[in-house]
Each structure stands twice: as structure tokens, then as C-alpha cells.
Length: 443
Ligand code: PMP
Image (cartoon, rainbow, N blue to C red; front, side, top):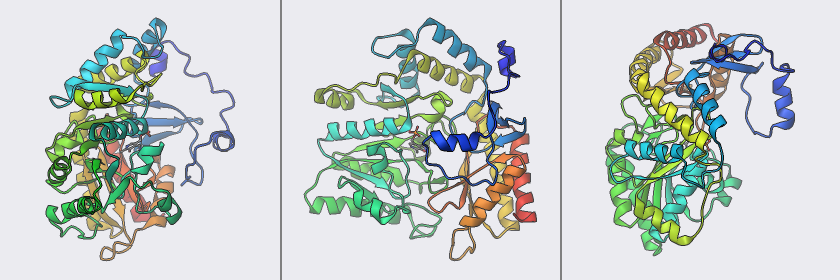
């Protein structure tokens, strides 16, 4: 165990470790659905595995933050060292903060060399929207239906789920203009549409704004469509959409919170898959391996526009400890070739999952790339009726077999696979074997 390597007594039991689920419900206000008859009470982790309070091991297939794996000893050591040296707010120019910003700018395309450090993906997207407002002098934002960008007020506003209830729809602010999904699996064109068909929904929205004489602030999207189940955008979609948005003075935002940082295996950033360069990149989750850390990376003239508007500052975003975490994650990604691992193990796992579509009609499709895959369950391959109840039952049965997985997507009929990027080939095979077993035996 890594804790033992560092001299901690990792066998000391947590005080009162029993009944965590009920206790969490009582005092921890996180609205979250439970899909399991007996939710696991997780106590510790190691690489892609989690262990509950009884010492039972689970393969963690839904973890989209802990990209270098659980319990990494290099992170424990780096955090301990920086914590004992200094941790405070990021007001002054600490070496760790400056160096981390330099490294992030070095990872971004040329020209995107100005970095804001924040604490989460939602915060990064809120700030990106404010930057787009300031740079364009306008308010109207386009975002994709079925997108998720966060839970704070602005990031939630552009998270335009098709499953929104009508009440929520009425509270969507007037500056948000949702665009029909370029979902190639179950969108209006169902795989038969050309990129032009999908992009036409963007131009239609822009024409509506033009007709009303309204100016555009920008366009935010993921580059592989997460909430829809990890579906890549149609080829050329962002190139065409970005051109239209920029022609109207709008700012383009690539939300890399989930897909960036090597998860796609074939690309470090998701926008590379689309062959575009956005004006603003937002990133979080994996960059801190679970430590609260996020960033907005953009061009100097865009940040200057907001600076003119006044004061903005995140007290704990970019703390020295946060920056050391961020740099150590980058070191580990590099030294352990984790993007390469995501590509190799992800390609292998995708092939194994795709083989299930021949055997089980319930498996409608396998989406995604690298270690960002989606298995979509449907009751009927013609109507694509979502197999929502079946998906929840499959997750519950997988838990019995030692795999943590949960339903996602607007119809809760997708297993979204986003494990730590250190997932071994053996663990990938274990997951594919267990899923086949559940589908064979029933649930
Ligand atoms: N954008 C995307 C694409 C996300 O998946 C998420 C989190 N699921 C967020 C933004 C929000 O990030 P956070 O939870 O760190 O606020």
C-alpha cells in the first residue's frame, strides 16, 4: 500500500466506518441517485481499484477525476512536501503557481498562453462565459442540447439537457440558445446525416439571432459529446460551427473538463480530434487527480477585456499545493505514458465491447475512444427505445461482481466508461468479461 510506503498506519480502521451511506444521506447534501441495493462504503484506493470498509475490492470504471490512479505515492509525497513548505491563497507569485501556469500554457496551442487557476470545472466554465461576454460585448451563448458543463449558475444555464423538465426550461435564462444535438446515434438524422445537416442547426440559431438584431457572445461545447454517451461530434462539425461563430464576433469555448488531458488516448485535447483551435479551453477534473483544481486557458487580449471590467479573483484557485498537485499529475502522465496506455487499453476494450453488440441485442452501440467509452442499451434497435431500467439493474449486478459502474446520459441508458488512465489490460478484460456474464445470465 502507498500509505505504508510513506510510513502511515494504513491498517488503522476509520472511526465508525459502518453505515456510511445512511450517515452521508443525513448530513451530506449532495443530491445523488443510488442505483445499488447495497451501496459500497469505500475506504481506500490503489491504482484503478477501490476497497470498501470490509476490504472488498472493486474495479473503478466511472472515475473521471482520478486519472493517474488512486493512492499514487508520488502525489502523496509532493502534497506533503508543499503543504509543509507553504499553502495559502494565490494572490502572490509563488514559484509553484508561476511554473504550473507556464507548463499549462506550454500544453495549449500557440497563442493560448494566459492561464486562470480555479477550483473546478463549473467555475472554469462560468469564468469562460464571463470572458466571452467581456470580449464580445454581448451576452448570447450557443450550447448543445444534451451537454453538461457544470452546476454553478452560468455553467448550469448552458447545460441544456433534453431531459430538462418543463419547469426548469422556463427558468433557462434568455441569453442561452440551445442548438439541436449533433448526436449521430439518436439525433434527428440518426447516423444518416452529413456534417452539413448537423451544422445547419447552428446556422439556423444564428439566423434567429440575426433576425432579432441580437449580437452573439460565443459558443461552448465539448469535443466528444459526454452526456450523450461519449459520442464524437461529426467530422468537421466544430470547424464549420467555429467559422460561423467567429464571423459574428463570437468567442469559441472548448470544455475539456472531461475529455482533455489524454483521456481520449489518441489526443491530449479533445479539440485536436476535430482539428480546431478554440479561443478558450476549460479544464479541471483529471488535472488535479481529484484535488480541487481547474483552469481557463486563453489569449491575452481576451483576459484583458475582462480585466477592464474590474476585479475577479479566486482565493483558493491555484493554491501552491494545488499547483504542485497539477505539476505532479503532469509528471506522472508523462513518466508512466498514461495517454498511450489510454489509447492501447481503450482500443482493446472498445473492440471487446463492440463484440458484445453481435451477441446481445440490448447493446445498441459502443461509442467513444480511448478510455472514454459509452455502452448504450436499447430495447429495440429500430426505435432506439432507451433500456433505462435494464441499465440500472445491470449496474447493480456489476457491483456484486466487483465493478463500479453507473448509468449516465439523458436517458440513463448508457454505461459511461471513464476509469483511471492507468487501467491495465487485465482490468479491461475483467470488465468486459463481467459485463458479458451479466448480459448472459440476466440481472
Ligand atoms: N464540464 C464537463 C464536460 C463535465 O463533465 C463536468 C463534470 N461532470 C463539468 C464541466 C463540471 O465540473 P465540476 O464538477 O468540476 O464542477
